[in-house]
Amino acid sequence: MKKGTVELRALVSANSAGQSFNLRCEVRERLIEFLQREHPEALPTSRQISFRDNGTDREEAAPPQKTAARR
Image (cartoon, rainbow, N blue to C red; front, side):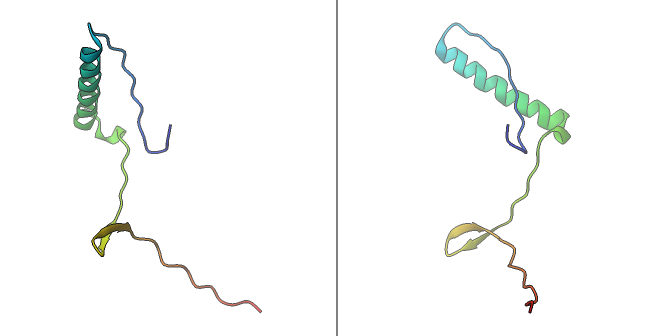
């Protein structure tokens, strides 16, 4: 599991593959909604600053630090 992620597992069953897929999606979305509403502190957060440059998004990088020359 990656840092900053949450893994939820739920076992569901249905009469057909299509119904099973739909049920898995519905359960996943409802679990996320529940966590967002009832326990938002349990979910990972991250922040990113993006700037537009020539019509494309890019992430801001910190400028390199200058160090004093050693002799």
